[in-house]
Length: 359
Image: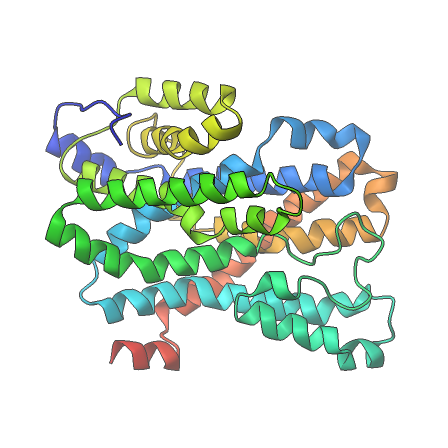
């Protein structure tokens, strides 16, 4: 983490920005980037190619991981016990995730090429439900007769990040225990380097013939921990009274834009951390969207099946720009509905399993 130069400590300013941060607005921006990217890349509409050419879903997802590192570490540090922390994490992520998996499985029967009786009795319907509910999305990404004519048949290609997030949640108590014992710099530096070694090592193996499986390994949990560790480091640094310099963000943005290949793998975590850290706690104040609700998770979860459905129904072929706009608006509406109908009530009312965890 020596990429970042130290700035003078100002505990009062850091505490104020920690309370009045931009995380809610940034998460909406990152979720919107993913929606726009998928509308362009999945539709394969020539007039929408600029969407995936100039908008990076990779950066957005990496930025999400940095945000998670900051906020989830802060959540654990502010929790009364690991049981309380686990209950909060479970209530935050599980209800909407279950809703999108089960909801898609049921509603997409309407666009399946199979009759309803064959669809609901099909082995792949139950495999989709079973594997996706236990976060093994890669084992059953598709539903029978659904999106078979699309460029990509997966029902929800965004869900792979959720299992990574859950793994982050599991990792945090051990990480914080080690930080309290040995110090943040030593532990987070080690995590950062090990993650880079995993990413680069499997990335190099993936270059060999038949190395596709190694490319999948490279992007799984250990390969993403460098971004999460960057966010955790940013939290501890802010808590100690420091704020990032604007020059960090500029250098990080330029580094991310011009690096490629091995250099990109090595520098991207620090570069994304620099940009997100500054934008969240030191950049100009963004609209306080969080006072209305946290809609970003729902937008992220629900948009992919919507894009796929519009493609399957031929809407992107006849009116690509209108389709992209309507999908974006529907994803936003679903994000709002999910917050008020599923996510917020779940956070207020502990389900039975959470009560057992906290007891």
